[in-house]
Image 1 (cartoon, rainbow, N blue to C red):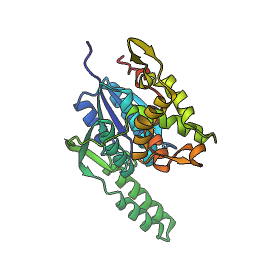
Image 2 (tube, rainbow, N blue to C red; image 1 turned 30 degrees about the vertical axis):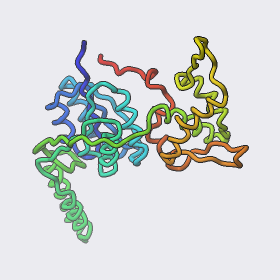
Image 3 (cartoon, rainbow, N blue to C red; image 1 turned 45 degrees about the vertical axis):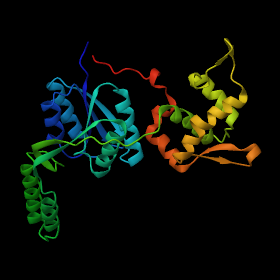
Image 4 (cartoon, rainbow, N blue to C red; image 1 turned 180 degrees about the vertical axis):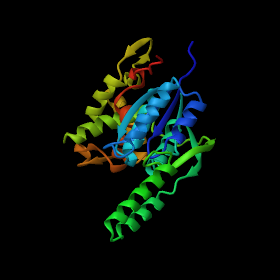
Length: 298
């Protein structure tokens, strides 16, 4: 039996050592580099990281994602679920504030280990800007070129010749204590995803529609009963009762579902918090856990 994979999820910003050092020191098997989409100036850092990690025997995959809270939460969640049963780590030191917050929340919701990397030093990114501004205020063209060249050379020297770098070295790696945030059960997300998908295309979902869907996707929720030694199919009234107690009432308590229309012709409506939940839990709301592909260990 193969040991669990050690998988690191690392947003890429303007740093190298804070990604490279912990991945190698902690013997990562696979690293997912999460780049901003559309890609900005961090692409050359990702190229360097991929080359160095591959040289150390670490598999590397690149992910592209808008650096927006719900998009990042959704990506982190999908990756953590992909590696269910493996050891997943999230680097919350790199990629900026939004990536750090999204990674922290994802670790708490989906059960990944968070860690923070303290750099050995930060690079003063304001000094070259100030030097360039001073050069541009110089009237003499020759002197201006000299000052601009000096500013660029000084900055490259401070970053080891690497542009757009904001830290260097690693002082320590700190694992963050585990805390859990309660998340909706999978069977509720499946129902919510069905209603939300129809709602997005302008179709209304009534209770009977949801029962028909759930009988196909979650038949265990609507099992037959035995009466006097004989199987008896569940009555429609019983199915409505199960729908209410196992699905609708919990989704309403989460604030994800409400009703539209009159009582006798009501349809189910996913609320704004429910739509946000679908963005975060995306894949889990549409794909049963038994059908998720197992991660490759090759």
